[in-house]
Length: 112
Image (cartoon, rainbow, N blue to C red; front, side, top):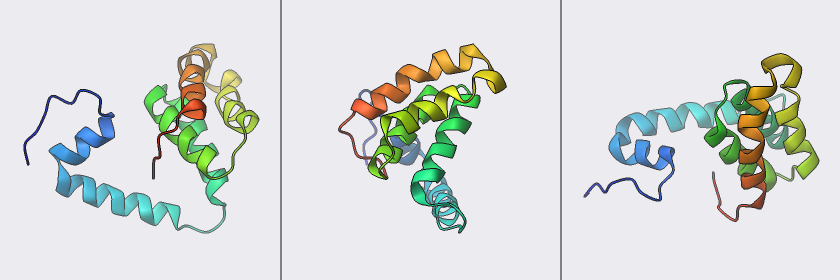
């Protein structure tokens, strides 16, 4: 497979192309986590949004916002998962990630 410059690809796509074996193992871990009982898929995505915000990872917030929306999360739930970090991670984390959550909400992209 010929590798290209990575333009117009999200970082996870690049990871999958550059390290297919490692990405496959990572995907198995993610699948195992998704199958854990206790929370429905929408709640898991909202928790992921909050964690990505705490880690100041706007790309992760966007991707998980897309996934949360596909699981039926409302705009208020998704944005609420970002701003709940205000007192925990600070204003900077929220301000870094709020635009990414809105991009995810407005995206027509499908992310598994």
